[in-house]
Image (cartoon, rainbow, N blue to C red; front, top):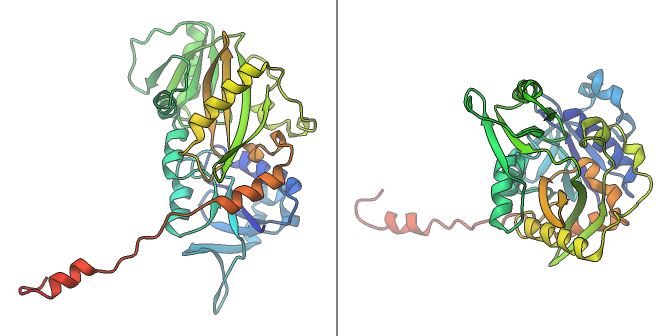
Length: 346
């Protein structure tokens, strides 16, 4: 299937999205189109041979063909006409704002574009960590206890140490701090508020185990990846997540008993179905005292979590064939016709 990969966006995770696109280029079994959204939210068709760091850091991408988005897809605007890009399905690979907050999902749904990625409601609920907690609770998945700090408020808040502070609307471990005392907590607040006006604070459990599970729904069947136990220091920081793609060469499943594997898959199923249909997501879970807790949902995971699947290309193609756009509503103006036929026309 001919894919188009959309990446970039006006986001703190813009550069991570570029790295994801480069990795996906190497993984896909068929040649794809690459659509870059720059910080001004302009779209460019990037030649696969130019998909490298320098193209973007030097702004050389501006020499590539500019695209416009309209009903049915992306178009190259020429002097006399517009040529539509021939792609059967667009993969939303923009991380963070724009790609995961619902803007791209809304645009694609509005313009009737076939795409892999979270739909609008799923984007809104998974982009905001506070809403994610509420959603998980509503579907019967446990989360760790938390508090919310809002910039300019919560002056009387007393944390329990150690604790972890996370910007509510940001992923990729950006702006996250672990605080063991009041001084570190105040510093962590300052760091977090640089990125967001709302922070989520959780008790930091040092010996808690973290596991990642990705998957998608094809028809009525959920396809799961392997379960990964990421190697981490104190917590999984930006460097460990995104500067070590080369470390994903060997597929090693986490050493868990069958009971915990079933619990993880059950929790994933509750989160995924039906809200995330059409997307390939990764859920990050904690296991503490033999219980499963959701940490966060990655609706557009880095490099689409390809390294967690034994046959990623087959899974992606099956998903692309199963995604469905919103059904169009037929407008027949019967009500207006009925008014028009009466006295005292509208």
